[in-house]
Image 1 (cartoon, helix red, strand yellow):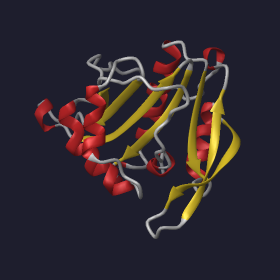
Image 2 (cartoon, helix red, strand yellow; image 1 turned 90 degrees about the vertical axis):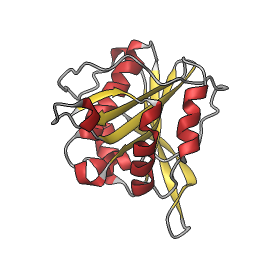
Image 3 (cartoon, rainbow, N blue to C red; image 1 turned 30 degrees about the vertical axis):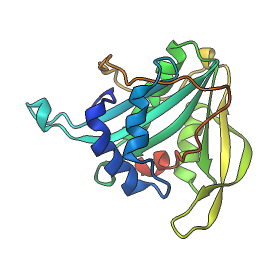
Length: 199
């Protein structure tokens, strides 16, 4: 398994993964729109298989993205294809995204997670996140019902021990184009698949 930057050609594969695991999936248009925007407010990575001698035969099996506003990184989305879950891929994606945020000089990280998603909450705690509040009815389930989202924060990122030692991997530096946003103007999107992906 290797990680690299999310490229425009990955949009179809990423969209299929997204629609498979999310009750509120992003559209292909929304993913593709990230490439039309500025370069300082996003980091998107994909994980792909590396068991083939040809890069053309590699398959994207997971992705994750962060948004940066001022000195805060917001984990927007992490998802792993069902047949590659429970392999630590989401954990490794998070570790790479969080380390990149640290290298960018971010002071803190934040995210939302479903109250019912115990595995995700535990994973974030292992990285040093702590729950600080709740967004009522933040998520919509497949049946139309609502579920609260817990708000997690990791402060003092520059001195934090992220607690997830992973083998360092070269990451393709061709980054997805990113766009600037007004402070605290965060797209509402679920990141709950993160925990499910590691089960």
